[in-house]
Length: 559
Picture 1 (cartoon, helix red, strand yellow):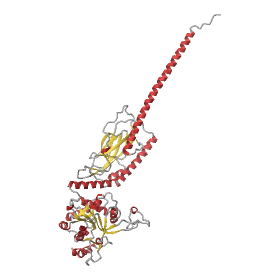
Picture 2 (tube, rainbow, N blue to C red; picture 1 turned 90 degrees about the vertical axis):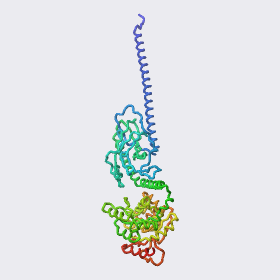
Picture 3 (cartoon, rainbow, N blue to C red; picture 1 turned 180 degrees about the horizontal axis):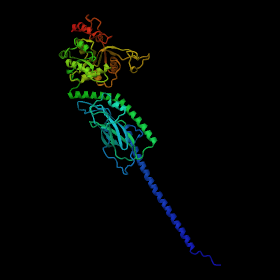
Picture 4 (cartoon, rainbow, N blue to C red; picture 1 turned 45 degrees about the vertical axis):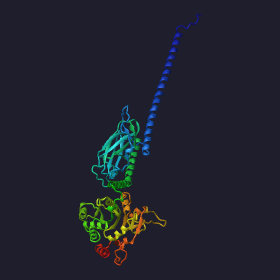
């Protein structure tokens, strides 16, 4: 039997196993290399995501620092084919020191005037690398066109002019057209601004109106967070975004309306005070140094535009009948008298008043809205005009009365001259009474709830002088004039005045000589009266006969 011999087959088998081992080793090394590369890639991805998250967090944190809060993004800026390499934004950096509050006052502190600006802007939409919105102005200082500056992530990306004719929402049209806004070139206009490509993710956009002073006013709905994306959001997200935008717009419009009711009046009052201080500074005088040119009293006489005959009766009795007589009264008693009346609408009604003013020069025509139904507001408007008037109507006392009342000018002159040094005075025939809350009553007070409720039920007005004749001293008059934009009016002039003064340091002077009855005899040696009227008629009940009779028997005979 021949011995066993493996021959060449064993060598082949060894080679096969060697090849298999080599391939297996190569496969394992390849897998290890691939896994290592994938790990490095995942690490790079993780670093990129972490960096984006950090940047977005920094943007949100920055927004929170600037505005106090930030809402969830509701705008999408979708651009399907963004460039691969997006450069960093370059431009001016937002400086919040250059911004002012909306509806703010501005101006040079060394100038002799304070400027008041009311500008509104709102971001309407952010999409596809474009922001749109609208603006309107309520100040001749910004007559238009209005410039809008856009910032993204605190970097300026656009500076555009609002010139687009757009279809504003009804609420926005109401806001922009209210208060008789007829400033040339300041009609509501839209703006459109494009911004450069941005990295994918959340960004923050802010829009500002550029004022002539160099300051900026931030638009409503700004800051606005938005998402830069290459992919459109799904249907659910689009519906959520649409609802959120509508809710946000409505909230912003409500906010703007609320600012009209609150912030604008306070800004006007602030600007008026600044203007008055600057005016005195420009004259090189303080308030006391101007005393030599000051009237003892300015008498403001309520009169309706149509009541020419009552003004004529007053001029035939105690009111100067012409400019020469008015000058003589000023030289003799240092008193001036002006009828105050609102300017009616329509040239046919205005022309008789203008002719009357040209002849007698004793009217203060209130050309303002919202004063026709409120005599107290007419008084404030007249006070404001008289303080700034070129006729130098600045006065130690302001007297308010009506055109069917007879006033003894010698008596009021003596009384006021004796009280010049007695501080803040509110003088008249003082009274009080229950606040009526009953729409069926002629004395119904719509704002009765403001006066509270007493323990026994009901409420009472603060002490106040009768509306037929009352006096406020200089600083009270100036306080009222400056604050007229923010002083709330009630239904009746006398109770309104009492409410305005109740919280001030005021000396009340209750004196019956301010309300002498026109029915009582006046020639029996009693105290000399200042004003004569019948309280049941808010003046003389029959002025055509009573005014001349009272004047001749009770005033002229004692002069």
